[in-house]
Length: 456
Image (spheres, rainbow, N blue to C red):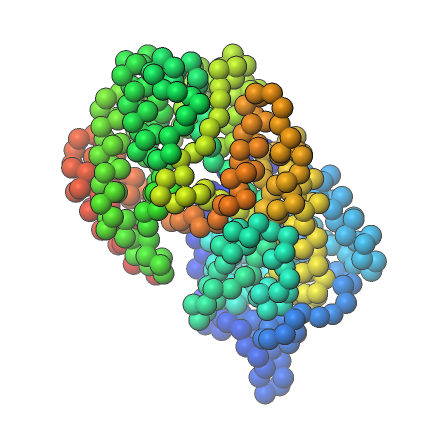
């Protein structure tokens, strides 16, 4: 998997639908068998008490499209684990990660054949947790939290069938968010590159200055709101969904209308290319041509510019993405989970912890083929992230994101592409002047609720 594609998986949203019948955790039946998600399991995998047992035997480990680019690294991790635990064998499965990944995961879970250790995103883990298919780490290994950034661990929770928040996953790798900008274009607009704004609306005000200076020769950013919804709202601490995720509530916050008004004003004033309103293109191409002042917020984008447009890279700097009302950034980490249905759960959990420990997370983040960030405190303190010399934007980006992640949370709003598109479509109508911002927000919430009701 390419670095760009790997990073993009951090924001992908998978929607799972697990049958409720037979799901959940059970102690024992008359026959004395325990169940997890309707599957017969060892009693030690469920209920109270730590998970105990020898670390030995064979387990399966599933990733998503990593073997091609990172086969050497993960085969090395597996070999190290097997050497540290004689008598163990880890069979690596690399799923292609295509459009049917979610359905296959559901089918495996319901057939009681879920891999012992699997890489999963938040929506998938949420569904598997609710149905009882993942090991409850808070009960089975209360010390599992120790290596991880406290805020990331605290926020990496899923709800079980009773609605209780539980820890069923280990945070693995994540992306980051920052401002990337062309210093020459900002200076032409009278914007000080050394003083990035602290709010989203402050950033919009800088966009407006770029529009005034650019006069159609260069722009501030791209117009399609798909890149900003719900990311901007999360940062502004605008709740997109209700606490149970069953209804949209963003229209209840007056700042949402203000946000749409700003977007409409910026589009009308030329802060964004007119033909980018419905385009799926990110800022990469235009930024590399020196025609857009602000690039992607993804740290890997900085390396892209360095490799593909050295002249623009020389004029590139990075800054803090506005913390706004939230007060910190959020991440969308990938997770490692251990199946409650594993026939060799002690070995599976031991490998999951080995894979996500500081040493292995740091080693993978140093791979030159990828731009990702770790979730362990020790990894973020590694000199690789902290000892930055000179003013190289890519190195500065790495250090900036590493510092952010020490206080970041995993609380990003997950909405389906259908719901996102419904909201985006209404905002686009407002930006085109076809309806008021207030009507667009109201209609967007109604359409989102229709879709959420259908999927519940």
